[in-house]
Amino acid sequence: MALKFLSEEWAKEVTEALNASDAFKQAAGTQTAKIQNVVTTPEGESKTYLKVEGGQAEAGVGDIDAPDATITQDYETAVALWKNELTATAAYMSGKIKVSGDLMKLMQMQGIFGTLPAAISSLDVEY
Image (cartoon, rainbow, N blue to C red; front, side, top):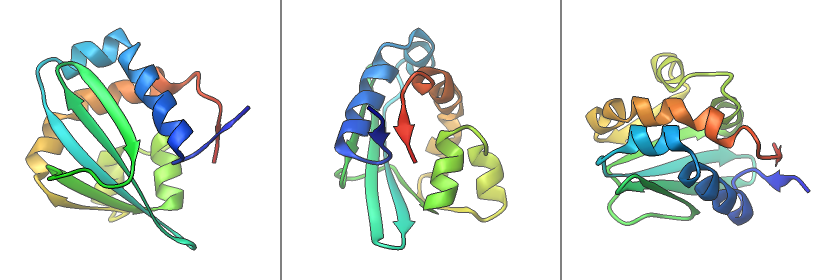
C-alpha cells in the first residue's frame, strides 16, 4: 500500500529508511539540525520536520521546537524535491523555496540531503 506524502505513516517510513542507510549515517556524522518544512497546498499548510542528531534522523509531522531553519515551498516543489527531480539549490536559486533561519546550517547539510533520494527510493509514496 502506498504511503500518502507528508502523512504520519510517510514520516515514520522516512525515519526508518534514513536510519537504515549507511550513507545517511556517514553523512550525518556528528551534525545536529532541526529543520521545519512548510508545504503550501490548496487545503492549507502541511508541516513536517527533520531532526538530525547523533547520526540518526527523525522525520515527523507538525511543528518542531526551535528549528534551525524553516523551508517553505508549494506542494509541486516539495514533490519534485522528494522525487529528486529538483535540487534544493536550484529550487532556492529560482525562488521556488523560501528559507528563514540559519541558511549556513542548511548549506552544511548538503551532504545529508544528497543521501535522501537513495535512502528513500524503496518507499512506495502516493503524491
